[in-house]
Length: 314
Image (cartoon, rainbow, N blue to C red; front, side, top):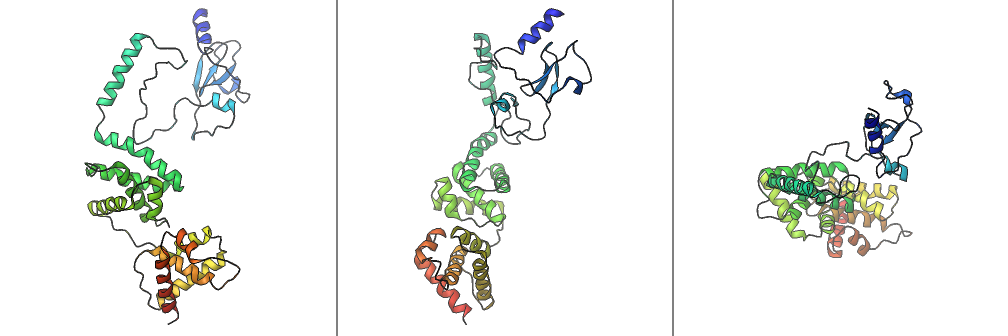
C-alpha cells in the first residue's frame, strides 16, 4: 500500500513544477487522505501532494483569463465548455504524450489508426463547419463585430449547409454573405465594402451569394436605417453629438417633405452630415473626406446633397 501511495506521489511530480495554492486548505475537504494532507491545485484538479490522492476537479463557471506564469501553470488542460459545432477533441499527429515523452511504436500505430478513423467518419456538413469557423472569427476580428452577429451568421450558414447550397460554391464567399445578412438582420450600420475589405473577396461575388441565400432561404430584409449611419460616420469624423443630431433632424425633415430614399442609405447619411457641417467653419470637412469614409464617390455625394437640399427647402 505504501508503495502504491509513493508511486502516485511520484506520478504527479513527473516533468512539472508544482506550485502551492495559498487559498486552498485541507479543511475545505471532508475526507482526510493521510495523516498530514497537503492539498495543491495541479492542472485543474485538487491533489494531495503527500499521498497523491485526487480530491476532485476545480469547477469554474467561466474560463479564467491568464495574466501570470502561475496562472498558466494552474490552468485547465481541457476546455470547460463544449462547443456546439465542430469537434471537441482532435487526435493530433504529435508523437509525444502529456508529459513530453515520446510514444512507443505500438501507441503511434494505434493513434494513427484512430486519427484515420476519426477523419473517415466525418461527413461534409462537419467538414464545412470546421472550414467556416476560422473564417467567421477572422472577419469578426477585423471588423470587431459583436458576438450576436457571428452567432446569427453561424445559424444562417448551418441552414445553407442543410439545403446543400455549398455544392460547387466557395465557402469563403458564403461565409462573407452570411455575415452581411446577419448584420442586416440585426440592423447594424455596416457596409458591404467593409465585408469585402475584411474577407479579401470581390464585392460582386459576395453580392451574388448574398442574393442566392436570400432567395433560397426566403429571408426578407428590412431596409437599412439612415440615422445609425449618420451617428457612425459622425463618430469617425469626430463630430460633436449635437451636430449629429442636427444632421438626423435634417434628414427626417427632408423625408417629411417628400424625399424618396432610393439607392444606398449611406450616401444620404454622408450628404446630411456634409450639409450640416458646411455651416460650421471651424470643422474643415470636405466632400472627398466624407465620401472616402462612407465608401461612395464624390459624384454620388453631390447628387444626394442636392436631393436633400431641394426637398428640405421646398
